[in-house]
Image (cartoon, rainbow, N blue to C red; front, side):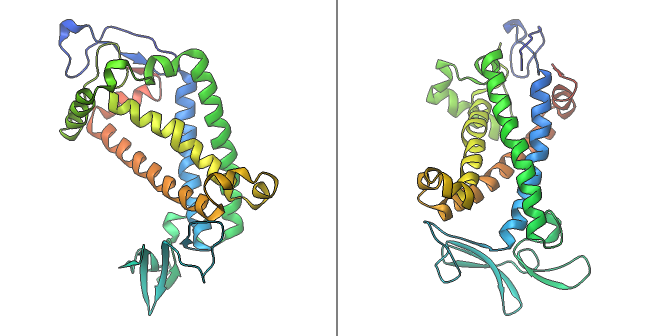
Amino acid sequence: MDTRHTDVAQPGIAVDAAPVGHHHATTTRIWHWVNLVALVTLFMSGLMIFNAHPRLYWGEYGNRDEPAWLAIGQQAQRGYLDIGGARLDTTGVLGRYTGSDGTMRNRAFPGWATIPSDYSLADARHWHFFFAWIFAFGLLAFMLVSLFNGHIRSMIAMRAHEWHPRTLWTTIVDHVRLKFHTAPGEAYNPLQKLSYIAVIFIALPLMIVTGLAMSPGTDAALHWPSMMFGGRQSARSVHFIIAFALVGFLLVHVALVLIHKPLTLLRGMTIGHRR
């Protein structure tokens, strides 16, 4: 997570501006790939856990007699997704779909999207809790090392001028136009920095805290995590929303890498050197 600069050209920057390249440290690259595996496994095993009760509520309690703000199920041979009272037909994708053996199955999320693929709440919990420890301690280690070696300060921290509304708006417009500019001496542009800050310091910690708040054992010993969100069911809803937001971020992240110099960026996050 250190930063080593070399004089190389960045796209969109004049040659005489002396732009800078950077080097991803070994610890950053290890955390990046371990975190990717952990997130994907947690997401897929979490979908299997959700299949056991495919409804979300706000508050402390939730059961099939309580109104749910989101529900996935099947009725009259059709799959559906209910969100806030609006019902969408999702037959073949959610609620009711054709399994790999050709039979129709009634399940919120299909087997290709879950771990394990066949219904097993116990196995899904084993997968989920095992990778949750890897995810939580990996994030903690990354944050501590990044604070001590200056990675956050040198590469992710926003500079004063980057908070200017005009700068932020220009960066957003450039991204929409698929123009990715990085200022001289900076590893990322303001929109990238804000995205990484939101993910690393807000979304990922919230996943850990809401996960603890959902646990009956944790709730019995430490009631404050669930109280932070207004109840265990609210924590479960926030956990679900952030999980899908992180998957959305991952898909956009991969798409932008494929659009903008994929080999260069992949090399930077594998062997370490990026130009």
